[in-house]
Amino acid sequence: MTTSSKEEPGWGSQYRLIATDKWKAKSAAMGKAVTESLVEYAQARPGMRVLDLASGTGEPAISIAMRVGSQGHVTALDLSADLLEIANDRAQQRGLQNFSTQQADAHALPFPDGSFDLATSRFGVMFFRDIGLALRELRRVLQDQARACFLAWGPIEQPYWQTMMGVVHGHVGGPLLQPGGPDPFRFAAPGSLSAELAAAGFRDLHEETKTLPWTWPGTPQEVWEQARAVSVPFRPMLDRVPENLWPQINSEVLAAIGRYVKGENIEFGTSVVLASGRK
Image 1 (cartoon, one colour):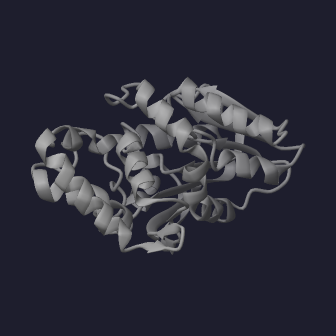
Image 2 (cartoon, one colour):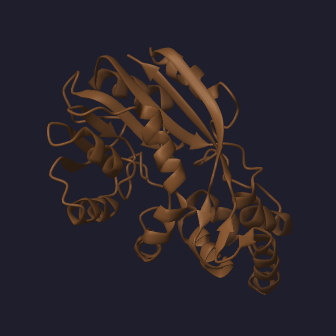
């Protein structure tokens, strides 16, 4: 997902897009439980007009479009036209006629006031450049009483991150994430996302941390390749790795991931934050 007009280096790179396309089926399978959790949390109903922010390759927008039916409509919004093209192709493969994409910045939404009955965002809110501005802009385009529902990463201290980025950081030291850069764990602290929603004028706030399946249907080598390609916030750290260290790091990462292998899958599990507010 892309949320700011000031895109981070490499975020829209051809390499990342190729990786996104290469692993889209397995990435979707890994994120299935997380997507389903947000869809259930949002409680979309038939006929609703829904905005999915930072939609990337189309979830949960596609799943929600299947819920709102032919009388409803879902708009998947992202800055990356390339990612939205993947989302549109996925929607067309499912025969969805109530789904559209919109390339735009979450901080300046190109919609009239009160355009939507519901808003969602999966793993996007952490990357808003100006969280207050983006949430106020989102509140503007919602109908009165409409909800905004978000899913964000919990703490970095969980298997998916520690087996890969944690191992790399143990070797190279320095900042795990670039100071002032994108931070996937920005709202891991309980209550931090709710506080931003309250400051933006949302009410009837709710927040919970939930443990969900996060299972890669393949090999450790595959998930490590996928993570290196798409985990853009960690790119500065990965770029600090001396070439001669990579063989040792790769060996340790694969061994660490191996502890979560069960049959033909890698069962990491994950901790996520669900938060919502009402206009």
